[in-house]
Length: 309
Image 1 (tube, rainbow, N blue to C red):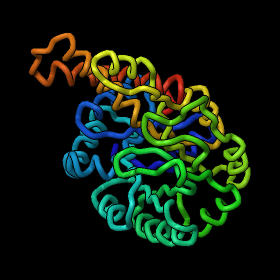
Image 2: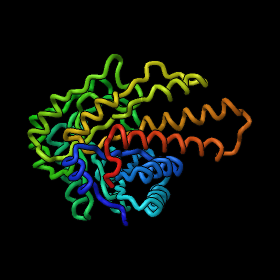
Image 3: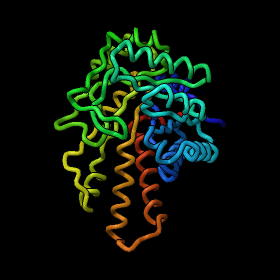
């Protein structure tokens, strides 16, 4: 089976009241951990690559790793560009074999956002590739994304119909209170489900995306802090809120920080217990296994997409 687009995935997810996990990948062990978990529970997958990951690992290497994962699992897998910041980057990924791209022009005024998004949509659709865009701005820091709390803004439901209609975009990332990185909330999480409900009414059947949706699992933060890290106040989105969003219009939930925390906590623990270890397989192997455990939990208990491949 070749790599697929998200079109059929999202249709089934919307109708079934679940979401597809979109997991950021940077290297072989992360890809293996994610895809082995999905194979174990028979779940569809979106593997996504940020501009930073593409620079780090190289486009060709990432393509071949994802293709290998598809061959090994036989699952429906979409390869997605996360937070593309220009037409040129999106075009390069479309031409390079990605089946889905995101153009993030949310920092631009409404009309400019439409103009840039439409340019990407026209090109991608001509090549059979689907497009995600963003309306509203999430706070937080992750790779090239850096938005202060002062510059963040909720998505305005009154704008979504015009934006989708004029751009022809295939899915829409919205801002309802999630944020990028491991420091999402200072107090209790407060997601604006009223905004999500309003958007769902205005765009019936249309797939919505949540960025910044890692739960920042305390077990991993505690392990990192125990072995020399300093992550006071790291706090993510409660999993019950993500389950609720998955049962509504949200068809794609992005998960990156939790993967980083799982890998980092495991590697720190290995070195703390065996400071003389120098075989990469002895610390990357356990990290891969922990990612597999984490992703399996997400697929079954948070996203609800296990058994949906």
